[in-house]
Length: 212
Image (tube, rainbow, N blue to C red):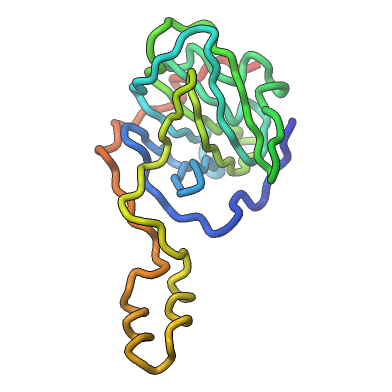
């Protein structure tokens, strides 16, 4: 594999976030401000992050790119479109499908679309179904045919410091300033909201293309 197992995926403490509109995080997948984390541990068939009707134009010969950090093997990670008519793994298993190192543990995968009906991406998903070595994988920066795909819901508030305790300890001890800091939102998780309700659960098992 081009990548190796990564014990620490994040550069710092990640903030839990909400899926972008139309996306569903299936069991084992979580969404953070740093990307989508797919952890196949404890699953029988892996996990996925899916959108049943992604309205992004794509045609044969276009490219799909994404970045990931984690273990690359046994078909994971991969992106599929049109219900599995094309996925980024099958063209070159364990070769280009694992991508190119870009630094700090990240890899970039680039796949050339083939075998689809020119139109839209439709049923699209990001998959980690490596249950033999179920290390978590984080995926970000999905681009389909030149269109950046939103995976994480946009923030509805300005970013704030991540550590509430540090905000409190920085205030003057024993006074109203410390009390006010303790009651404030300083350092707490930035609240995010979904643009729309998640799409109906979609099982990735029916959308997998065969893997070499």
